[in-house]
Length: 443
Ligand SMILES: [Zn+2]
Image (cartoon, rainbow, N blue to C red; front, side, top):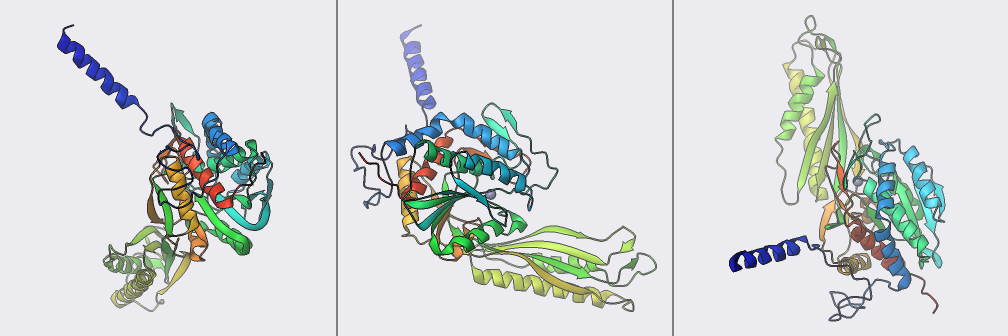
């Protein structure tokens, strides 16, 4: 080997070593920040909102030492089907896990699982939540396929990762014997997805509203964002009905499917602004009984969303106008009205209120401190989550990911990788305890 080859080889070795180094630095813990910055001072220069000490450190370390256990529980919970309105079996499994770490666990009428960790004071409550339900109907194959570090299954990330985190955080606090100042509710709630219409979170906020200090929602895995703005949405079902008849002998009577198509074509030409972002989706359409029957009914489900309440109202009005016009067009085009006319209605299936966390809220400041402590950066985001309910009532709330990496949410190819999940879990733990406060250890 000549000198040039030798130095090229050295360069290669150094490059490979650099490439192999973790992209995130080794984790500091609160109170162990770089000496250039006071441990009690955050980026903004204000007082840190995070607790510190040996017990906190023990809880943070617990996640690192028990990653395999957390992964296994995530897979186990994901394999218990939880279609919309059928969350009870998975709820029962979460109840067992929360009971095992000394929480007082109960279930409410809605089907939520609530594990109570009593604080030094019971006057105020902080909720840490993860939704139980998936978007997948009963009968979906939810077995988890594990290939090296990757787990693949419908619902593995949304919200298998959130549920696993809920149980892991409860367990880490238990093992480290941490007592919060304010009472913490560990909540596995029903009805987050689709037609569930946030009914679990609605029931909880209704029950605890007077004492509710803040809500921290864990949904999915990604820790690169924090949802502080609640996206308002409305879901409606259009139903058009008519006399129905034979395709040949009754030809010419008004046809509900024709009317629905006429109205839909008008509606999808509606212009919506990109700012404020406003969207619609014709998501489900059904009707008719056979190819040679004039249907007596047609149905369409539509999802409407906007960053602006005014735009949302405008969009729903446009849908109503378009369907009305489609029905009128079909009636005018029909040449036989003797058997009856078309009727139509628009039913509200779900409505998610909007809202926004104040930029100077203590909860956001605490999350920012937690981000800094685990060397994470996150951007503010608007989304439709369980946090909509508290945010719409002016209660501090955020929705964050539980750590690790995931993708393909709401698809059969959904996947999750737990590498570095402890960073997300530590971020949750610090944000939770920074908000609840911790009873100081007596030295
Ligand atoms: Zn989710």
